[in-house]
Amino acid sequence: MKSLLDGVAYIHEKSILHRDLKPENILLTNTSSTCTNVKIVDFGLSAVFFLERSKNDNLKAGTLVYMAPEQATKQSYSKKIDIWACGIIMYQLMSGGKHPYYTKGEQLD
Image (cartoon, rainbow, N blue to C red; front, side, top):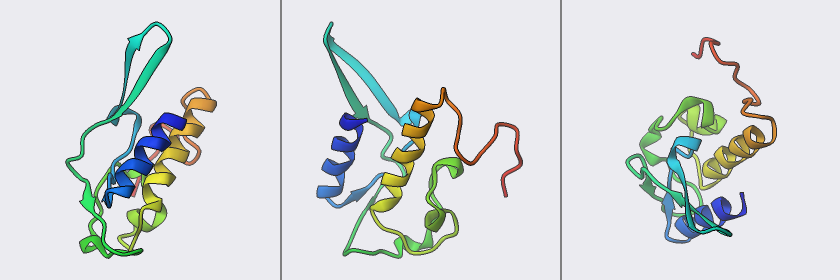
């Protein structure tokens, strides 16, 4: 998680929002038997972030079960939406893959 959060901090320093962080967009690579690198991929929905808040065209972009509430409801959002997704991912890592709010097969609106 630390490596993932370091990567998110780096892209945020470059004023980029990923907007679709999920396990499928995180790659692990072994550079040696003791070192694993985390790579964030699929920047197809990313956006350049201006100021502390952004309307971001009110775009509902990303994977719903990893979206922060403000992103899912098309409200203005900030870099915090990527941190929300990291929290969901961390919960899943610690709970054996369970999602804190969504149960597989549940109807999403």
